[in-house]
Image 1 (cartoon, rainbow, N blue to C red):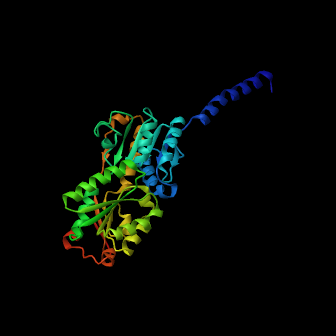
Image 2: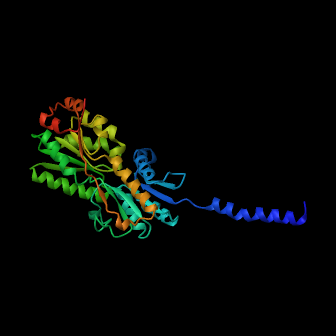
Image 3: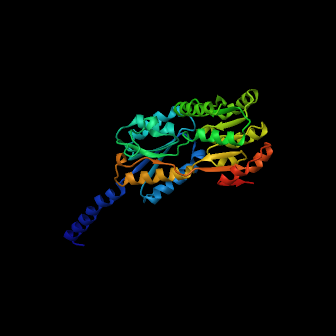
Length: 327
């Protein structure tokens, strides 16, 4: 090979090196996924989030990277996790659960945040306006807390002679615990009911709190929001039947696990919408111009087998209103 041809060949190959190297170095956009749950508990929510993300055109590992941060119910870990995501300069933070959303908001005013929370985000201070958030934060609310008085109302309708009720909250989740307690206490007062607010920080508190419920002669139980209750749902359902305490929760998984009834939204739909919003922001939309989405469909589910075990007769009028009856 002639020297001139050899030099030209080497020069041509060398010219392609920077392009190939550049192609390899092009970084995928990164989503920081922040949650109060453990990976095992949170996967049932992360899956619909990824589905919504895919509907917006993004698939994890293909054209977007997702960095997961799971607090495993240790809420005090969330601020450091949020700060780490900010330091890594992720493109969007998906803050799922109320404590995660508050931690993300405190960590950055510039990186877009998409939340999925269980109460009014204006009351939490996450946004100033639902229709136009006017900041770096937007998302979805399933209104778990706002519907808590309705759960008490349904339980009292089913148990008209019960005059003493209880509400379970996790005091470590201070914002949700305070809002839920205030809302349900007010609803109980309006109905002439006595309400005991009982604290549960972990599954290890369940047996003790049911001893309190028995001592207080509680006629009905409203189970509050938070990962601690979702994690221990099977045990909670079993305890309510064993101790003959009619109870209501927000999600269908409770009556499906053997509990009495539930009233709330489809949580997977909220996460799907949060995923879709995250994708839209990755495409360049401004979170300040994306209105906060609110749950609109609420479902009543009753487990007739649990009702029979508890000695409760579900009136035909309530059965007619139920969206699902589990036999």
